[in-house]
Length: 68
Image (cartoon, rainbow, N blue to C red; front, side, top):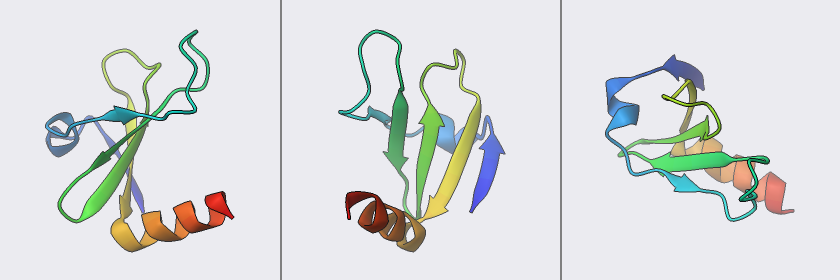
């Protein structure tokens, strides 16, 4: 796992906002899937901000624990 600040690869991804994120500026998490990794960022930070990069296996484990 790593955090990348303004990576060019992360800027080229298609980002999707979590369906649990509110429309009133509440908790806003965006996720994008790359070829080998999954990227997570806070959509409230204008202009980007830190990006959390996870391997697909790490992401699957996280989702499995979060859903359980």
